[in-house]
Amino acid sequence: MANKLTPGSNMRWESSRMILPEHREAWLTHQQDTTKVKKPILDEQRWLEFELILREAMEYNEPLRFTYWKNGSFFELAGYCHYVSHDQKQFHIVCTNDDVHYLKFDVVMNVERA
Image (cartoon, rainbow, N blue to C red; front, side, top):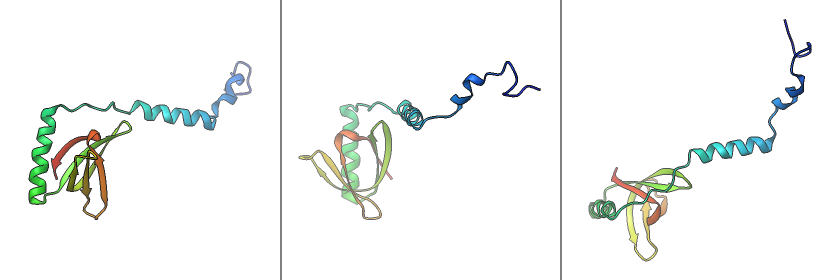
């Protein structure tokens, strides 16, 4: 039975089993970068659909679910659209637990009724 100390074993590479913190950090960063998604570009028709959904939801005080893109990933935010600021190009959203969020127009990827 062969072990690490018998002739013919590869003792030369035994010390390479450890991973340095810098290597681990670089590997984790690489893993995160491979899962990132490029930001999609929405067409004008899609924005018109969002406008109709937002108008009805704001009129009848219905909750909405916003899907937005940030740093290569998609996130969801559920709440009520309280105000749309065209000057600042953002949505003013109040969540169910009374948290206030501001979503820029350019990061919103989908708006649907919750």
